[in-house]
Length: 70
Image (cartoon, rainbow, N blue to C red; front, side, top):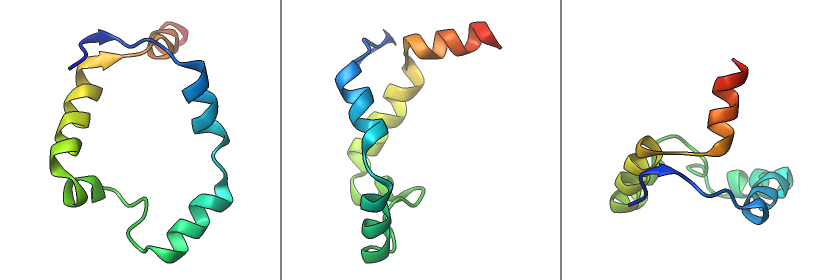
């Protein structure tokens, strides 16, 4: 488990920002539970628990910049 500062990945950041809205709308139309809050705990509780702990114990460079600006 990662503690502290996460190493930024430009490739993953661009991929996350360019995933199309249309793709998400299609998935939402097919699967009524797609993108709903708490679905991770139902589908894969072990991964959801890991992600929750990971997100609470690590931070990114961009989080630091946001705090400095505010």
